[in-house]
Length: 326
Image (tube, rainbow, N blue to C red):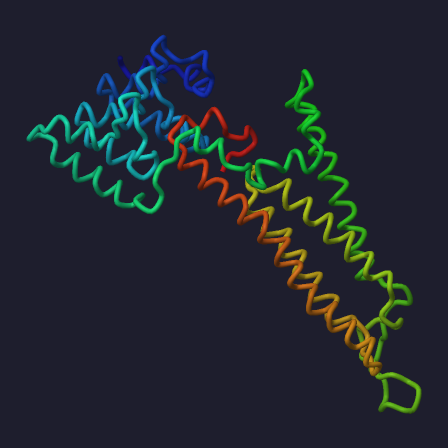
């Protein structure tokens, strides 16, 4: 097969089952099997740019990935390019990994390929593979259950599930953003405004205040503003994690939460009343802890879920989320 036969139209549909051969081979399988290194490099570059590296873990009818084929044909250059991208411990239908295939062949021409595979395998000793049955027998992770938590499960059963679910996610995201905006603005513009100057020395009944603090005492409505802000911020975090450029969006949203912490810390009025001081202290100290939990919990859950799915010795196309591109 020549490089020119790898038409763009085929590459663009590489992630669909209709473009597999009768042996369930992808075009990457075919390129490696026919020793077309240049064609393989073109396809590998395209997959990386499209964030579709999981296609390299797809298996043919014998359960062989591209890595198995490269090992069986002693293509050291392909092995070197793939060893940091694919699942080294993936097994075919015979229960063999790529390393097992090399050890079985025992060819004097294979020491370089064996060394590359050994290095790659050492990197993954701490993360052994898991069968699909083992993966499915475990409880769903938080990320896998987020559609249920957001009430999108019923929509996914409709005829146009992808469209309806996507639209619903967008609506939820817009509403959450509006609530965050309103509550954040309420914190910046409290009833009564702010003191414009510092108070003189304490005298009798007057409490000390500083420029930039609320003119009103700490009021109970702040609790409800905080609840609305936290709830909406949490929904936003759950929805954006895993989306394209989610790391940038996630960082920006986290910065907004931290900025809100700093704002409330500075504008809360001073107090000489012990009970009010204790309430204010709990509020100020608990606020950053809550923000940190909201910011990091979805991110950690996403990373752990991604690691779990990467360990599964099964083509990722069967259980990857369609919107998850990173």
